Image: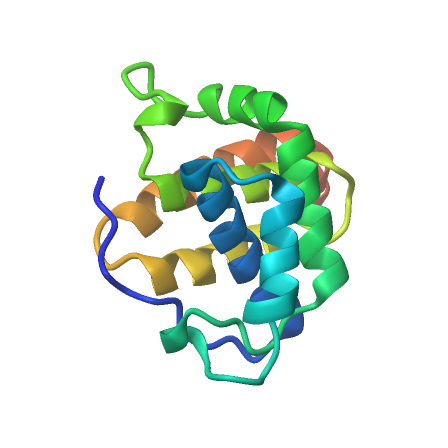
Length: 166
């Protein structure tokens, strides 16, 4: 899978913006080796907020900073666990390391949100990350992400899907 040179489309919701920023921060930390706290600080100071441009300039104009920091710190603290969850929902021939780095960051963030409580509902998590996947990718990646997200959600939040099928 290859990353297309696309930018996520502007989100009108602060929670969506937080997730976009979290994926970007996780990607940056993963590739640069910078500490999570350094990347969080850079984003809060220079990339989150309406001043200085929008998504096309690498900024996230609207974001809920507490959610952003919660997701980035949570994934950083539990990367091994998130990768184990992801690996359990990939085909045998795929490894977490083989995933496109942006897709890997997106799936790690979603895995963290799905595994760290019951809010927001699993379907909301899936929809949010699918909207973001469509903003980042123009190829088959969103379909791939949808399959992994659905499988993770049904595994990690099985009770939500059992309740809705009654």
